[in-house]
Length: 249
Length: 72
Ligand SMILES: NC(=O)c1ccc[n+]([C@@H]2O[C@H](COP(=O)([O-])OP(=O)(O)OC[C@H]3O[C@@H](n4cnc5c(N)ncnc54)[C@H](OP(=O)(O)O)[C@@H]3O)[C@@H](O)[C@H]2O)c1
Image (cartoon, rainbow over all chains, first blue to last red; front, side):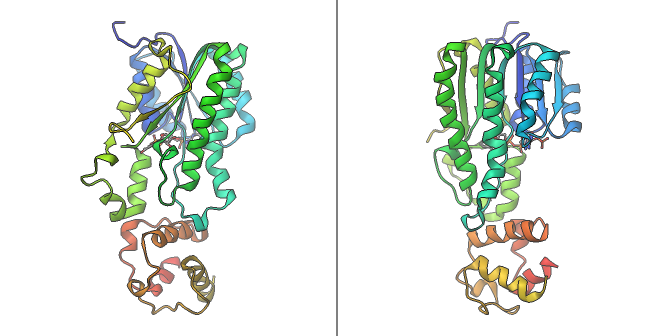
Protein backbone atom coordinates (compact mmCIF):
# COMPACT_ATOMS: atom_id res chain seq x y z
CA UNK A 1 0.00 0.00 0.00
CA UNK A 2 1.33 3.45 -0.93
CA UNK A 3 -0.63 5.37 1.66
CA UNK A 4 1.24 7.56 4.11
CA UNK A 5 -0.85 5.86 6.77
CA UNK A 6 -0.60 2.08 6.73
CA UNK A 7 -2.85 0.09 9.05
CA UNK A 8 -2.70 -3.14 7.03
CA UNK A 9 -4.00 -6.13 8.98
CA UNK A 10 -4.25 -4.15 12.21
CA UNK A 11 -7.25 -5.08 14.34
CA UNK A 12 -8.92 -1.79 15.24
CA UNK A 13 -11.95 -1.69 17.53
CA UNK A 14 -14.35 1.22 16.89
CA UNK A 15 -17.29 2.04 19.14
CA UNK A 16 -20.05 4.29 17.83
CA UNK A 17 -19.39 2.74 14.41
CA UNK A 18 -22.98 3.02 13.20
CA UNK A 19 -23.10 6.78 12.71
CA UNK A 20 -21.27 10.08 12.33
CA UNK A 21 -17.56 10.18 13.14
CA UNK A 22 -17.40 6.46 13.97
CA UNK A 23 -19.01 5.49 10.66
CA UNK A 24 -16.62 7.72 8.68
CA UNK A 25 -13.72 6.33 10.64
CA UNK A 26 -14.67 2.75 9.77
CA UNK A 27 -14.60 3.66 6.07
CA UNK A 28 -11.28 5.46 6.44
CA UNK A 29 -9.69 2.58 8.36
CA UNK A 30 -10.92 0.18 5.67
CA UNK A 31 -9.16 2.40 3.11
CA UNK A 32 -5.92 2.10 5.14
CA UNK A 33 -6.14 -1.69 5.21
CA UNK A 34 -7.26 -2.28 8.81
CA UNK A 35 -9.53 -5.07 10.02
CA UNK A 36 -12.27 -3.02 11.62
CA UNK A 37 -14.26 -4.35 14.56
CA UNK A 38 -17.42 -2.29 14.94
CA UNK A 39 -19.56 -1.77 18.02
CA UNK A 40 -22.89 0.10 18.33
CA UNK A 41 -26.48 -0.80 19.17
CA UNK A 42 -28.09 -0.50 15.75
CA UNK A 43 -27.38 -3.81 14.00
CA UNK A 44 -29.07 -2.86 10.70
CA UNK A 45 -26.79 0.13 10.30
CA UNK A 46 -23.71 -1.95 11.17
CA UNK A 47 -24.62 -4.55 8.55
CA UNK A 48 -25.09 -1.84 5.94
CA UNK A 49 -21.71 -0.29 6.75
CA UNK A 50 -19.92 -3.64 6.76
CA UNK A 51 -21.40 -4.39 3.32
CA UNK A 52 -20.06 -1.10 1.99
CA UNK A 53 -16.44 -1.87 2.90
CA UNK A 54 -13.73 -3.29 0.64
CA UNK A 55 -11.90 -5.37 3.26
CA UNK A 56 -13.16 -8.84 4.01
CA UNK A 57 -12.04 -9.14 7.63
CA UNK A 58 -14.36 -6.54 9.12
CA UNK A 59 -16.71 -7.58 11.92
CA UNK A 60 -19.53 -6.03 13.90
CA UNK A 61 -20.82 -6.70 17.39
CA UNK A 62 -24.12 -5.02 18.34
CA UNK A 63 -23.86 -3.97 21.98
CA UNK A 64 -25.32 -1.38 24.36
CA UNK A 65 -22.28 0.20 26.02
CA UNK A 66 -24.39 1.40 28.94
CA UNK A 67 -24.15 -2.23 30.09
CA UNK A 68 -20.69 -1.83 31.59
CA UNK A 69 -20.68 -5.20 33.35
CA UNK A 70 -20.82 -7.13 30.07
CA UNK A 71 -17.92 -5.32 28.39
CA UNK A 72 -15.11 -7.60 29.61
CA UNK A 73 -16.93 -10.65 28.22
CA UNK A 74 -17.57 -8.85 24.94
CA UNK A 75 -13.89 -7.97 24.45
CA UNK A 76 -12.85 -11.51 25.39
CA UNK A 77 -15.20 -12.84 22.73
CA UNK A 78 -13.89 -10.33 20.16
CA UNK A 79 -10.25 -11.26 20.84
CA UNK A 80 -11.07 -14.98 20.62
CA UNK A 81 -12.66 -14.46 17.21
CA UNK A 82 -10.23 -11.92 15.74
CA UNK A 83 -6.96 -12.11 17.64
CA UNK A 84 -5.32 -9.42 19.75
CA UNK A 85 -6.20 -5.78 19.21
CA UNK A 86 -3.86 -3.14 17.72
CA UNK A 87 -6.05 -0.13 18.35
CA UNK A 88 -9.25 1.12 19.92
CA UNK A 89 -11.26 4.25 19.15
CA UNK A 90 -14.10 5.34 21.40
CA UNK A 91 -16.49 7.34 19.25
CA UNK A 92 -19.69 6.18 20.95
CA UNK A 93 -21.22 9.10 22.75
CA UNK A 94 -24.33 10.99 23.65
CA UNK A 95 -24.57 14.77 23.78
CA UNK A 96 -27.89 15.66 25.35
CA UNK A 97 -28.81 19.26 26.01
CA UNK A 98 -30.24 19.87 29.47
CA UNK A 99 -30.38 23.09 31.51
CA UNK A 100 -28.87 22.88 34.97
CA UNK A 101 -32.25 22.99 36.76
CA UNK A 102 -33.08 19.60 35.24
CA UNK A 103 -29.57 18.09 35.34
CA UNK A 104 -29.91 15.56 38.14
CA UNK A 105 -27.11 13.17 39.12
CA UNK A 106 -29.14 10.41 37.48
CA UNK A 107 -29.06 12.31 34.21
CA UNK A 108 -25.31 12.84 34.54
CA UNK A 109 -24.85 9.14 35.27
CA UNK A 110 -26.63 8.18 32.01
CA UNK A 111 -24.24 10.41 30.07
CA UNK A 112 -21.18 9.12 31.95
CA UNK A 113 -22.08 5.49 31.25
CA UNK A 114 -21.60 5.83 27.50
CA UNK A 115 -19.17 8.75 27.26
CA UNK A 116 -16.82 7.86 30.11
CA UNK A 117 -17.33 4.58 32.02
CA UNK A 118 -17.55 2.44 28.89
CA UNK A 119 -14.38 4.12 27.59
CA UNK A 120 -12.36 3.38 30.72
CA UNK A 121 -13.79 -0.13 31.01
CA UNK A 122 -12.84 -1.02 27.41
CA UNK A 123 -9.41 0.57 27.94
CA UNK A 124 -8.95 -1.46 31.14
CA UNK A 125 -9.72 -4.72 29.37
CA UNK A 126 -7.80 -3.74 26.20
CA UNK A 127 -4.70 -3.13 28.32
CA UNK A 128 -4.53 -6.74 29.55
CA UNK A 129 -1.53 -8.49 27.95
CA UNK A 130 -3.66 -11.21 26.41
CA UNK A 131 -5.81 -8.67 24.54
CA UNK A 132 -3.38 -6.32 22.79
CA UNK A 133 -0.27 -6.02 20.63
CA UNK A 134 0.51 -2.66 22.20
CA UNK A 135 -1.03 -0.14 19.86
CA UNK A 136 -2.98 3.03 20.21
CA UNK A 137 -6.15 4.10 22.01
CA UNK A 138 -7.99 7.21 20.81
CA UNK A 139 -11.00 8.74 22.54
CA UNK A 140 -13.29 11.10 20.70
CA UNK A 141 -13.56 13.82 23.30
CA UNK A 142 -14.80 17.30 22.44
CA UNK A 143 -13.89 20.96 22.75
CA UNK A 144 -16.69 20.88 25.29
CA UNK A 145 -13.99 19.51 27.59
CA UNK A 146 -12.28 22.90 27.42
CA UNK A 147 -15.03 25.43 27.01
CA UNK A 148 -18.41 25.50 28.65
CA UNK A 149 -21.72 25.76 26.89
CA UNK A 150 -25.33 26.43 27.82
CA UNK A 151 -27.25 23.37 28.99
CA UNK A 152 -24.27 21.07 28.40
CA UNK A 153 -22.88 20.55 31.91
CA UNK A 154 -23.13 16.75 31.93
CA UNK A 155 -21.62 16.50 28.46
CA UNK A 156 -18.75 18.93 29.20
CA UNK A 157 -17.95 17.11 32.45
CA UNK A 158 -17.99 13.70 30.73
CA UNK A 159 -15.53 14.88 28.08
CA UNK A 160 -13.24 16.50 30.67
CA UNK A 161 -13.28 13.16 32.50
CA UNK A 162 -12.23 11.41 29.29
CA UNK A 163 -9.32 13.80 28.75
CA UNK A 164 -8.17 13.37 32.35
CA UNK A 165 -8.27 9.61 31.95
CA UNK A 166 -6.31 9.84 28.69
CA UNK A 167 -3.44 11.64 30.40
CA UNK A 168 -3.34 9.16 33.28
CA UNK A 169 -3.66 6.08 31.06
CA UNK A 170 -0.88 7.32 28.78
CA UNK A 171 1.52 7.31 31.72
CA UNK A 172 0.39 3.99 33.14
CA UNK A 173 0.24 2.12 29.82
CA UNK A 174 3.57 3.42 28.48
CA UNK A 175 5.32 0.34 29.82
CA UNK A 176 2.97 -1.85 27.79
CA UNK A 177 3.70 0.03 24.58
CA UNK A 178 0.20 1.46 24.40
CA UNK A 179 -0.29 5.11 23.42
CA UNK A 180 -3.44 6.92 24.58
CA UNK A 181 -4.73 10.19 23.11
CA UNK A 182 -7.94 12.04 22.41
CA UNK A 183 -9.25 14.33 19.71
CA UNK A 184 -11.38 17.33 20.61
CA UNK A 185 -13.65 18.25 17.70
CA UNK A 186 -15.66 21.47 17.78
CA UNK A 187 -18.73 21.00 15.57
CA UNK A 188 -18.96 18.06 13.22
CA UNK A 189 -21.61 17.55 10.57
CA UNK A 190 -23.24 14.39 12.00
CA UNK A 191 -26.60 13.26 13.38
CA UNK A 192 -25.61 14.59 16.81
CA UNK A 193 -25.13 18.04 15.28
CA UNK A 194 -28.43 17.78 13.38
CA UNK A 195 -30.18 16.90 16.62
CA UNK A 196 -28.63 19.93 18.33
CA UNK A 197 -29.87 22.27 15.58
CA UNK A 198 -33.33 20.75 15.67
CA UNK A 199 -33.64 21.21 19.40
CA UNK A 200 -32.18 24.72 19.50
CA UNK A 201 -34.01 26.08 16.42
CA UNK A 202 -32.99 29.58 15.29
CA UNK A 203 -30.98 30.28 18.46
CA UNK A 204 -28.74 27.32 17.62
CA UNK A 205 -28.58 27.93 13.89
CA UNK A 206 -27.54 31.56 14.41
CA UNK A 207 -24.45 30.42 16.29
CA UNK A 208 -22.97 29.17 13.04
CA UNK A 209 -23.52 32.27 10.93
CA UNK A 210 -20.27 34.14 10.21
CA UNK A 211 -18.55 32.72 13.27
CA UNK A 212 -15.19 31.10 12.49
CA UNK A 213 -14.93 29.85 16.08
CA UNK A 214 -17.94 27.65 15.34
CA UNK A 215 -16.62 26.16 12.11
CA UNK A 216 -18.42 22.93 11.22
CA UNK A 217 -16.12 20.22 9.87
CA UNK A 218 -16.91 16.93 8.14
CA UNK A 219 -16.61 13.60 9.99
CA UNK A 220 -14.15 12.34 7.33
CA UNK A 221 -11.70 15.05 8.41
CA UNK A 222 -11.78 13.88 12.03
CA UNK A 223 -11.41 10.29 10.81
CA UNK A 224 -8.12 11.16 9.08
CA UNK A 225 -6.64 12.65 12.26
CA UNK A 226 -7.71 9.61 14.27
CA UNK A 227 -6.18 7.27 11.67
CA UNK A 228 -2.90 9.14 12.01
CA UNK A 229 -3.00 8.77 15.81
CA UNK A 230 -3.63 5.04 15.38
CA UNK A 231 -0.67 4.64 13.03
CA UNK A 232 3.00 4.19 13.91
CA UNK A 233 3.61 7.63 12.36
CA UNK A 234 2.30 9.04 15.63
CA UNK A 235 4.75 7.00 17.75
CA UNK A 236 5.79 10.01 19.85
CA UNK A 237 2.25 11.16 20.59
CA UNK A 238 0.72 9.98 23.83
CA UNK A 239 -1.20 11.63 26.64
CA UNK A 240 -2.38 14.51 24.50
CA UNK A 241 -5.75 15.90 23.47
CA UNK A 242 -5.74 17.41 19.98
CA UNK A 243 -8.10 20.27 19.19
CA UNK A 244 -9.57 19.24 15.85
CA UNK A 245 -11.90 22.12 14.97
CA UNK A 246 -9.90 23.69 12.10
CA UNK A 247 -9.53 27.00 13.99
CA UNK A 248 -8.20 26.48 17.51
CA UNK A 249 -9.34 27.67 20.91
CA UNK B 1 -52.10 14.80 34.74
CA UNK B 2 -54.54 17.58 35.71
CA UNK B 3 -54.20 21.11 34.34
CA UNK B 4 -53.27 22.27 37.83
CA UNK B 5 -50.41 19.77 37.98
CA UNK B 6 -49.20 20.77 34.54
CA UNK B 7 -49.23 24.44 35.54
CA UNK B 8 -47.30 23.55 38.69
CA UNK B 9 -44.64 21.83 36.56
CA UNK B 10 -44.31 24.92 34.38
CA UNK B 11 -44.20 27.26 37.39
CA UNK B 12 -41.43 25.16 38.85
CA UNK B 13 -39.55 25.19 35.57
CA UNK B 14 -39.86 29.00 35.27
CA UNK B 15 -39.03 29.39 38.98
CA UNK B 16 -42.32 31.24 39.53
CA UNK B 17 -44.68 31.13 42.52
CA UNK B 18 -47.76 28.93 42.65
CA UNK B 19 -50.64 30.66 40.87
CA UNK B 20 -48.39 32.96 38.78
CA UNK B 21 -49.36 31.19 35.56
CA UNK B 22 -52.70 30.57 33.90
CA UNK B 23 -53.68 29.21 30.51
CA UNK B 24 -54.13 32.80 29.28
CA UNK B 25 -50.64 33.96 30.20
CA UNK B 26 -48.93 35.27 27.07
CA UNK B 27 -45.45 33.75 26.85
CA UNK B 28 -43.76 36.82 25.38
CA UNK B 29 -44.99 38.82 28.39
CA UNK B 30 -42.98 36.57 30.71
CA UNK B 31 -39.49 37.76 31.52
CA UNK B 32 -38.60 34.10 32.18
CA UNK B 33 -39.47 32.99 28.60
CA UNK B 34 -35.89 32.99 27.31
CA UNK B 35 -33.71 30.56 25.34
CA UNK B 36 -32.81 28.55 28.45
CA UNK B 37 -36.41 28.12 29.56
CA UNK B 38 -37.25 26.99 26.03
CA UNK B 39 -34.55 24.30 26.31
CA UNK B 40 -35.94 23.35 29.73
CA UNK B 41 -39.37 22.99 28.19
CA UNK B 42 -37.99 20.62 25.54
CA UNK B 43 -36.39 18.44 28.21
CA UNK B 44 -39.49 18.57 30.42
CA UNK B 45 -41.75 17.61 27.53
CA UNK B 46 -39.52 14.63 26.78
CA UNK B 47 -39.07 13.49 30.39
CA UNK B 48 -42.63 13.99 31.65
CA UNK B 49 -44.75 13.53 28.51
CA UNK B 50 -42.51 11.49 26.19
CA UNK B 51 -42.89 14.11 23.46
CA UNK B 52 -40.06 15.35 21.25
CA UNK B 53 -40.47 19.09 20.87
CA UNK B 54 -38.22 21.06 18.50
CA UNK B 55 -36.98 24.65 18.66
CA UNK B 56 -39.09 25.51 15.62
CA UNK B 57 -42.28 24.03 17.10
CA UNK B 58 -41.82 26.14 20.23
CA UNK B 59 -42.07 29.28 18.13
CA UNK B 60 -45.73 28.41 17.46
CA UNK B 61 -46.65 28.66 21.17
CA UNK B 62 -48.27 31.98 22.10
CA UNK B 63 -49.80 31.30 25.49
CA UNK B 64 -49.27 28.91 28.38
CA UNK B 65 -52.52 27.31 27.19
CA UNK B 66 -50.78 26.29 23.94
CA UNK B 67 -48.14 24.45 25.99
CA UNK B 68 -50.82 22.76 28.12
CA UNK B 69 -52.61 21.63 24.95
CA UNK B 70 -49.36 20.21 23.53
CA UNK B 71 -48.80 18.30 26.76
CA UNK B 72 -52.06 16.52 25.96
N1 LIG C 1 -20.98 16.02 16.16
C1 LIG C 1 -20.30 16.91 16.82
O1 LIG C 1 -20.44 18.12 16.60
C2 LIG C 1 -19.29 16.47 17.86
C3 LIG C 1 -18.41 17.43 18.36
C4 LIG C 1 -17.47 17.07 19.31
C5 LIG C 1 -17.41 15.75 19.75
N2 LIG C 1 -18.28 14.83 19.24
C6 LIG C 1 -18.18 13.47 19.77
O2 LIG C 1 -17.97 12.57 18.72
C7 LIG C 1 -18.47 11.28 19.10
C8 LIG C 1 -19.32 10.76 17.95
O3 LIG C 1 -20.43 11.64 17.79
P1 LIG C 1 -21.20 11.81 16.41
O4 LIG C 1 -21.30 13.25 16.15
O5 LIG C 1 -20.63 10.90 15.42
O6 LIG C 1 -22.65 11.33 16.89
P2 LIG C 1 -23.72 10.33 16.29
O7 LIG C 1 -23.77 10.43 14.80
O8 LIG C 1 -24.94 10.58 17.07
O9 LIG C 1 -23.11 8.89 16.67
C9 LIG C 1 -23.06 8.44 17.98
C10 LIG C 1 -22.64 6.99 17.99
O10 LIG C 1 -22.61 6.51 19.34
C11 LIG C 1 -23.29 5.28 19.41
N3 LIG C 1 -23.89 5.10 20.72
C12 LIG C 1 -24.64 5.97 21.44
N4 LIG C 1 -25.08 5.41 22.58
C13 LIG C 1 -24.60 4.12 22.59
C14 LIG C 1 -24.73 3.02 23.48
N5 LIG C 1 -25.46 3.11 24.61
N6 LIG C 1 -24.10 1.86 23.17
C15 LIG C 1 -23.39 1.75 22.01
N7 LIG C 1 -23.23 2.76 21.14
C16 LIG C 1 -23.84 3.93 21.42
C17 LIG C 1 -24.36 5.37 18.32
O11 LIG C 1 -24.73 4.08 17.88
P3 LIG C 1 -26.15 3.36 18.13
O12 LIG C 1 -27.20 4.40 18.21
O13 LIG C 1 -26.28 2.44 16.95
O14 LIG C 1 -25.95 2.62 19.40
C18 LIG C 1 -23.59 6.09 17.23
O15 LIG C 1 -22.86 5.16 16.46
C19 LIG C 1 -19.25 11.47 20.40
O16 LIG C 1 -18.47 11.02 21.47
C20 LIG C 1 -19.43 12.98 20.45
O17 LIG C 1 -19.52 13.41 21.79
C21 LIG C 1 -19.21 15.15 18.31
